[in-house]
Image (cartoon, rainbow, N blue to C red; front, side, top):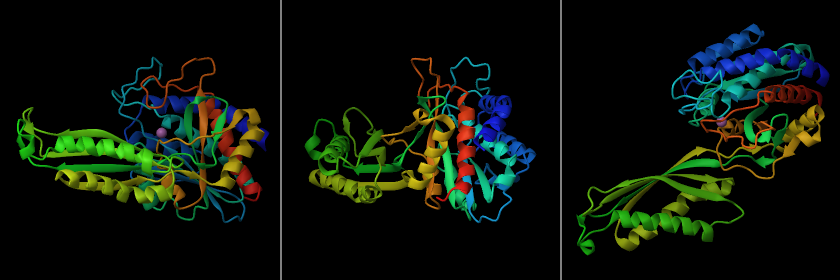
Length: 394
Ligand code: NI
């Protein structure tokens, strides 16, 4: 069966590269993937899948009915949105939309999803159950997965697989990880309210800027002294705003930041922990405060058995030296975790780095490029894992 899947994928390779380049040239921002989703649904329909458009706003679902009586439904999820980045590569198929670029490889994800659907649709007689392909919008703003779930995309789904490109792994190889793959990402807003006054008479005012600097310093120090170092927490203040003039003491400062963590229990305690520190500092110096903590996406926690299935399928397909078991998670975020709240699943890293280049630019970089041979690695890995899903107990 592996040989058959590899043959089907190899035959499709020129078409898949054409598809990837088309999507790459026509990137669309989160929530505006109109052309991309129309294109995706066209390809899915012509491969004989049952297609539903407008799921999760601009998302698409394609469903493939197997020929057996297995009740299990396997979902395969990819994302379609691009980023507000000016592409600086000199590729002949570089972005034709000024200021928008597929710099996170979602063009490759969409292509791998389509390629897997094309391969599996040609061997539907080997599939005892259903496969549902989810092409979601708006991953970059961490909303698309929730939109899909709210529109019922995960109804009846037993398990879910996904992938993300990874430039530091060479094309031809993949990475799997057991347990935490990415971090929970929450938004933080702290407002400090002091009392305005003359810059020459600080003792008659409550200086919100100075207190804000104490809050930031105390939070960073407290992480290292009061959080378990084996359960990482990263708190970054990315925006600070306050004050009116050089000689006027500021009465209000707003701090905006992101809070990343891996362990659900650690995450659950963070809002109280932050509020207590802010309260202590502000109370000491007579300021009022507000802490608004908004939970974003949870951490992606890969299921053990599905990760094992991915690893063994990839090792059979490419040899064990081409499958890395990743030792560390990333503190980046991925809204794939929203699907995992509905069904166990696993996401793998697809190597897209050029073996002969010293420098492979990172994701979200204006010079980010992928070695397109990785598309076939992705399609075969995904299709063979889906096949094995039905043909081994897991
Ligand atoms: Ni991405």
